[in-house]
Image 1 (cartoon, one colour):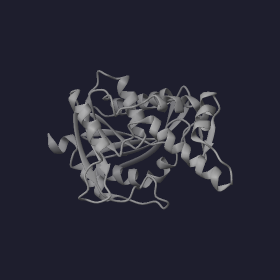
Image 2 (cartoon, rainbow, N blue to C red):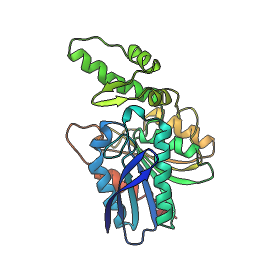
Image 3 (cartoon, rainbow, N blue to C red):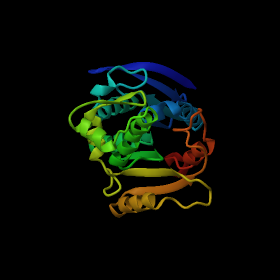
Length: 270
């Protein structure tokens, strides 16, 4: 088994990666992380995912995107296109190293970057695993802005999300929960909604967290998947139970999610 940390050079600076790989992987996966603290909260789970994929004779490449983690760049200068370029470079690195199929694996808001990447590579049919995907960027942005509203309220200040949105529209970066939100990235989220239109062609396996094993999938998730299927996409959804490891106060795991995901891998089905 290989666990290899390394940097890739790009025009915008070095990008940190960690590779988990079996000696001769039958398939490789590129992980696309979520934004902000969710990326840090999920690092242990993604490491466990990499170890599990190695046991299936596969590989997982884990990047820190521009302005995040140990990669170069200032977050305030990042756009969605910047991250798409990072994903393109990481994909090419995997393609050059391993002559096997490549898939994409995203968590939460990483799905927004995944979908943008697919828009720019329409000729390639990717297998995609989506963990608790964010489909509506405007809703995600609003949830993130509420963190600042709550923090300001604790200090005795009243802040409205409309005011914060206006500041972003005027080109002012916002520091929220220790992260500097750049206006171009916020604007891209504001105008991204995959609940009404399908992403590019691909094989999608979608995992949505349930509060109880007997709970149904959220109606909004079902409706979105049906919309994608109506446009010809291969989409299957599953619910999973366990802690929302991307947002718990302490670092937590959700091992059943990894096992369920492994059972849907292309090599296990085909």
